[in-house]
Image (cartoon, rainbow, N blue to C red; front, side, top):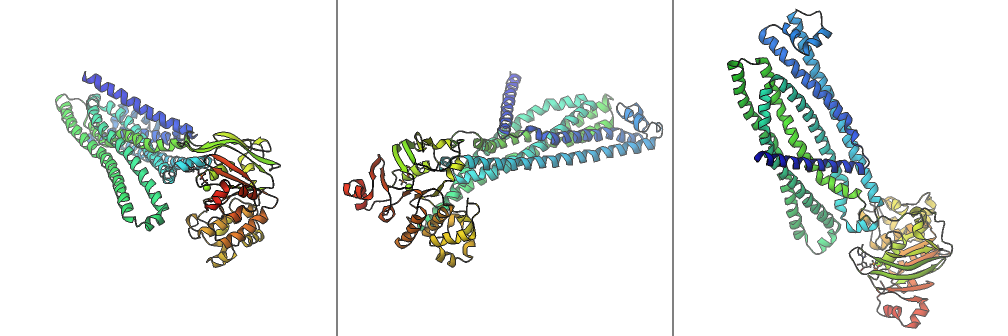
Length: 617
Ligand SMILES: Nc1ncnc2c1ncn2[C@@H]1O[C@H](COP(=O)(O)OP(=O)(O)O)[C@@H](O)[C@H]1O
Ligand SMILES: [Mg+2]
């Protein structure tokens, strides 16, 4: 009964392991990496293991030669005599020469073993780091393909860790796994030699080993649990870290450093506990192995004494080598458990990386095939609906026509969906229902590149790279001359600011442009749109942080560049929407009013009310 339980457990755990290997294999398939990249490391490992076995096999006659003071017996030994008849047939009786050749052969085996082991290690290292690099690049490519909603919903710290940390962890584990495979190959060779020397002793070892394996399984399961806990706690730590760093000014303003510190310390301590638990459990494997093997050796010594002196069976040289091999196999035995531990430890990061490669909830944008050559007549928003995941509210049945060459202003209370509407127009979000058509063609049918090249967009939140002012200004634009840059700077009223900057236009703006004021950042991003000189201008509260004088100047510049262009602007100041050909009032109920400023003000409806209450956002 016990045996059947044990074998049942064994089959189940084997199945689980195979499943994990299958998972890893399907993961490799997903990222288009063939498992064959590990053929060379394993092949070299196999050759090294064979030579390692050879060197031990040759030790037996060498030691026997020393003990007996004569090495002529090699001609009667299987394998060795065949080798001798090939390489030194003339030394049939010269004992000392035979002995020297034996030593040289053993030495050559050791040298070859080390050469192949080195080749195995460096080919592993080459493949593993290449693999990690491929993985990093593929993940980055995937990130660039995901829709904006994916980033709205996922923590940036975690996404960074997947790309940099987990890819490295997987690589390190794979490297270790390959070392284990090598050790297991060596173990197989050792076992063959051990069987050859004494099958009785070896069978005895095989009866005792499963007991030990059972004990090891407990430790390995613990490692798996600690590794899973580690992933959970570490992700949470990263999430809170990026939150804290991004909101540092808020923390300072509310003097919340103490609480932030407490929370971070608590999570950091948890991570430390997990890290220590994993090491504590993993490091147990080797000493336990060693103690087990020592106990085993003591048992075996008793048996050997019995075989040699009572049963007169076997030779001292053979048994000596047997023990040397057994001693050496400690590391190889533990490689089996280490290999299992690695498969368990790798499953956490591989699982996280795998989520990047499946297509669920990535909000990819539909990419059409047609080239967008430019707006000819009008943009029609037809029955457009959109809701954010998990939210019931959103845009409902929006119908709107934007005519070429006209300025359309969208106003409405905060949260009514103005930015969302422009985000759909800018192809950040896919509408849930309805469509946007340009001259009768659904915008989904255009390639994203050709479509967006005709738009100059200033978003509500300004996005700036941690780079120079100039590089931020010309980001995404090609063949921009210094003359054009100078003109744009003048238009956008940025001359004074650039004069003040320590390195002028080549000054770094800091993370997200922290070294600039809100208004300066907006001016820079408007300048970028002016410089792009695209047919369709889309401005989302682009001047909200500017003082009224700056706004007037910028407004003039925008007015100049929007001449002959089609513009959609979201604004909250009368001065901004004054020049609009059409004003659209958007509320949570949808578009409630549409018309020129005079029409809407005289109508004394929603726009009039908003204006009265100064609630233009
Ligand atoms: N990324 C997002 N995920 C979920 N909900 C969002 C997201 N962005 C905006 N919302 C919600 O959608 C609604 C409309 O937002 P938005 O278009 O930014 O409004 P407006 O620009 O008119 O102030 C708001 O209720 C807001 O809370
Ligand atoms: Mg908005």
